[in-house]
Each structure stands twice: as structure tokens, then as C-alpha cells.
Amino acid sequence: MQYRTIIRITGLLMGLFSLSLLPPALVAVIYKDGGGMAFIQAFVLCLLLGFTLWYPNRAHRKDLRTREGFLLVVLFWVVLGSIGAVPFIFSGQPSLSLTDSFFESFSALTTTGATVIVGLDSLPKAILFYRHLLQWLGGMGIIVLAVAILPVLGVGGMQLYRAEMPGPVKDSKMTPRIAETAKALWYIYLALTVACAIAYWLAGMDVFDAICHSFSTIAIGGFSTHDASMGYFDSPTINLICVVFLLIAALNFSLHFAAFSRRGINLRVYFRDAEFKVLIAIQLVLTAICFATLYGSGIYDSAEETFDYALFQAVSISTTAGFGTESFHSWPLFLPILLIFSSFIGGSGGSTAGGIKVIRVILLLLQGSRELKRLVHPRGMFSIRISGNALPDRVIDAVWGFFSAYALVFVVCMLILMAQGMDAITAFSATAACLNNLGPGLGEVASNYASIGDGEKWVLLFAMLFGRLEVFTLLILFTPTFWKN
Picture (tube, rainbow, N blue to C red):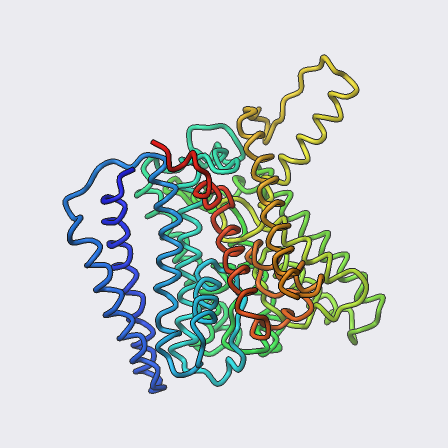
């Protein structure tokens, strides 16, 4: 294990991350909200820690193997999530405990969107901006992780997105080097963020709200500058803009890369992709169910208003954003549970969305169908195909392994929460919301997570990490085999 090389890279990451603490300090100066000092102190501390790790190991530049890759990915999220908590610890408003500071930071960086802060409308602009910036940076980290790094490590069926392998993105072969891939993804991510911010501003948000909400929309994070979330603006136009950009961000970013490459715009790439078609179908079905149930219940005054709420909440929850225009947990019948379950599917692989991912669900269903065929025709040879391409059994095995590990982590986390005294509905929804990187749940955590205990927050913090790191990446560190030479 190349420990000194890993420490050097970690130090560099900390040094780079310290730069993200300067924009909130600038926002504090612009709005004169007195919240800038916490970010200056955090910047100095982060820079010193990064230099301390990097300088003694600056000459160690050995090539990293797969094992070092796993450790480095986990360290990236754990170290930056911990450093991200420092401004919350130093800040006087809001006054957060150590546990709450870590919870808020990891929730932002993993784009979960679960918050322990109440009274967002009265917070300093610097803190509000920082929360959204963390989500935006976390969202970009997720894209690079999912499209450029995890396929190389072979995590949970993500080999499907390796450029040299057949699969749903065969036609969107990306640049061969990770650095070039990351650069291309940054351009796409930044362009979508700018377009989203301009759309929000034109729809009626002020500049600050438009920038902040564009960060959390493209990252599919769900943080807002107001306690009422998107409901604060009371605008069907803003809701529709949010829905459109959430769907765009929930698509595989390598599809965007292929559709808007240097060779010209080719929108047919999307319609040839099986995952895209299934994702859109899921959104349409969910919206139709929510609309029919709400309209039949007569909760809202008109069909237009009912459709606005149904569409927004269906897309927001199923893509794991967690924005709200209405308290969906108060909706009738089975809708709240249905929406929570939809977050298990999430968005596409290689997107900023959480959940198991649509492509894995497709492969699980296809594998189930193949087993039924084998029962009828024991000697038959049946291959699993996506977009006309046969997939190797190694990918299918990895998907089943991922699903098993995901279910195991979910059950263990939920049981630990219940053992600490949390009721069943809250424990189930909180675990689902954090493991799927959704944010809002049901019961005690319907609005925020401020009322639950510190022990429960740490359990949910680990659930966020498991969900964000595709379970295997973190789980493998707990196996003795990983640490043996």
C-alpha cells in the first residue's frame, strides 16, 4: 500500500478544498452579514493541515493500484466532509454542536440534503451560500467518481460505463484519460449550472437565490435558502424549471457528453439509451399516480394546481433531490410511502442522483426474467442485452452483489436506529432518505433532523457515505482481505 503517496494526494486535495472557503467569505463582505471570519479561520486551518500532509511526502509519486484507489476515494469524502464541518463549528450563527456540524457538512457534500438547521431565512448569506456550494462541489465529485473512477475500480456493476465495454453508453465513448474525462464533465456541469441560474433569475428569483438554487438543483442536493424550500416562491414557472433541470441532472452525464460533443449536437443519443427511456417512463407513471390520487381526494382547488404539485414532488423525490413545494408526508393514502420507495431507484448511473440507479434496476429485472425463462427451458441459453448489446455475466454478478450489500446496509442502519428508540416509520424513512441521498423523510424527520439524537445522526451520516460511495467502495475497507498484501 502506497501510504505516503496517498497522504500526499490527500494533502493536495485539502489544499484545493481550502479555496472553496474563500467565496463564502466574499459573500459575507458583500452582504455585510458578519459571517466571514469563520470561513477565514477555516481556510487557514485547512491550508495548514493540507501543507502538513503534502510537504513531507511531496517526492512520493508512485502509481496507484486498485487498492489505493479505493482508499483514496473514501479518504476524499471523509476528509473533505470533516474539513467542511469546520466553518459550522466556528460560526456563531447558526450555533451548531460538533455532531450537527459534521452532519450538515456530510449531508451537503454527499448531496443528501438532510438538514439540522431551522430558521434558514434568518441565517447569514455566507452560511447559506456555503451550504449550496458544498452540494455543488459534492455533485461534481459524484460525477467524476461515477463516470471516471468507479468503472476503473469495477464497483457494483459500474464497469458498464467503462469506455471499452459494450453497454448503454457505447456510442458515448468518453476520453480515455481520467483527467481529460473530468475536464469535459466540469464543462458540462458548469454550463448546466449557469443555464439553471439564469432560468431561475428570469423566472423571478433574485440573483442570490438563483445561484444558490442552481447549485443544489444540478447537484440534485435539495438544500434551499428558505425553510419553505421551493414553496417559498409560490411559482409554477420556477417549479417547472426545477423539474426540467432535475431530470437533466438525473441523466448519465456521459450521454450529455456524447450529445453535445465537438462533432455537433446529436439528441438521438438520448433516445437510443435504454436507461433514459426507463427513467422518463418512471417519472410519467409516478406523476400520473400522484395526480390521480390527489385530484380524486380534492385537496387542491384546480387540476392545474394539482398537476403542479404532483409533477414537482414526484420528480423531486424520485430523483432524490428532496425539494418541496408541499409537505408530501401529509398527502393521503399510500403516496408518501410510494415516493420514498421511488427514491430507491433514483436516477441514472453517472448522474448526481442517489439511489440504486435505474440501470441496475433494469439489469435486476432482466436477470429475474432470464431466471424465469430458465425454469421453463432449463437447457436454454439466454443472454441479457441492453440496447442490443449482450452483457457479460461479471456485470450481472456485480449488480446482484451490490443490491445485496445495499439491502444489508439498509437493514442494519434501520435496526440500529430502532434500537436507539426511534419509531419504525421514522427509522425506515430516515435510513431510506440518507442511504438514497434524498434528504426529507417521514415522521420526526419530515421537515428536518434537528430533533433526533446524536447517536442517530452519526448512524445516518454513515448511511449517507455508504449511499454516495456506492456501498462497495466503503464496505471493502472493512474486509480483512483489503489490508493483506
